[in-house]
Image (cartoon, rainbow, N blue to C red; front, top):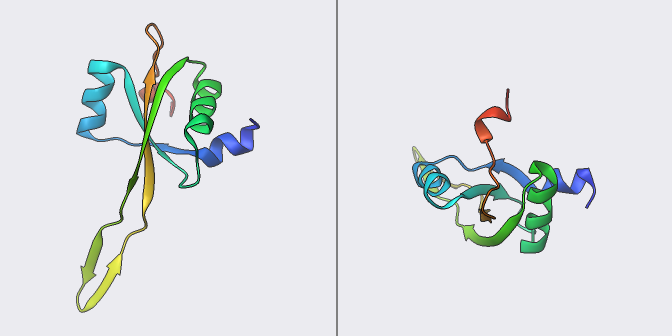
Length: 99
């Protein structure tokens, strides 16, 4: 997989309280991914970008929330997230990536 497609598949890490608990407890990481990304593509992208071994990928489609601004009704975009499980002994430190 070329570098351009890796950055099209993996959009951002999803930072939440649940994602932090999963990272600590069961060595899983949560990523916001492209809506057309397949599990195999996500696995290859994480392995190549972070130099780790992925054991499992679970995905889900998240519906966008309905928002109201005064009289206007709006809706946020739908998006997809992936739960990536890593092999024993492999680790991703998301805090040091931005530095």
